[in-house]
Amino acid sequence: MTTSEQDRTVEGKVVVLTGACGYIGSATALALAAAGARLVLSDRAGMPIEELVDRCASAGGHAVAHRGDITEDRDIRAMIDVAVSTWGRIDVLVNNAGGTDLAAGGDSDVESMDLGLWDRMMAVNLRGPMLACKYALPTMTSGGGGSIVNVASTAAFAGDVGLAAYSASKAGVLGLTRAVATSHGKRGIRCNAVAPGSVVTPAAAAMMGEEFMRSREATRLTPRLGRAEDVAHMVAYLASDRSSYVTGQTFLVDGGGFAHQPWVVG
Image (tube, rainbow, N blue to C red; front, side, top):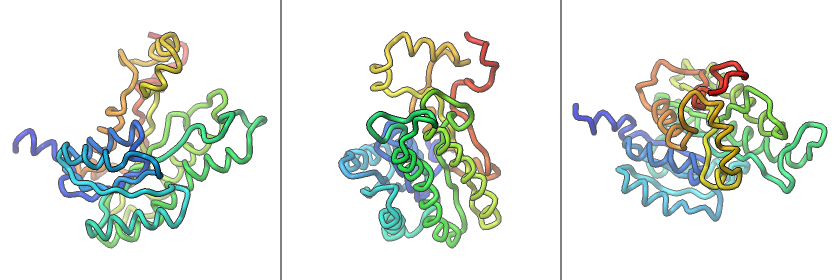
């Protein structure tokens, strides 16, 4: 087997990816395309999905676009229908769509919580993945099984200032992951979660400034902060048959941020 063949770890697998046009989403789409996937790329209106479809083709995969709202039942049903009508089945579902700040004023502590923001955060970060699982599972099980990968966050494991809704929603994703792994494991479904931490977008780095980036980097065991590709490669592994004995687990992609005591700084 050649090196290129070894890299085609999801050759021919049909993958539904939500939040495809975001920083982590687009990197994941390209990693899966390079590994041979046939993709349904889903994101909301206004996002450059067609451009990403072309980039996936250049990377060696095949992709079609779906525009929809992860909080809308009918849009998620339509996303599943696109996969089935285009490719005939679903082998992998990647629940990547999510949000951290969905209203003016942003997330907050519980005492100051805006109830509308709380509800929207739960709708996007938790209800959306649940609905995607709900509607993808019948197709996946009838086709012999497959892999579900939920993108959570290290915020599910530890509190932060002003991220109560986000943290709670991502903790819920971990519970959802274990529930699906348990209920559908004997029907051929694996379900795992990936929890990124300190994966910094160029826009976030520019906004936070160099001093903040250095302080964040000092808490990592690696000599750098995370990149979207770091998460994408973990998702691709969990989507592939190489992880066929792995289910119900959460993988932290955080440069070792949660591997040490809080007073240990590099």
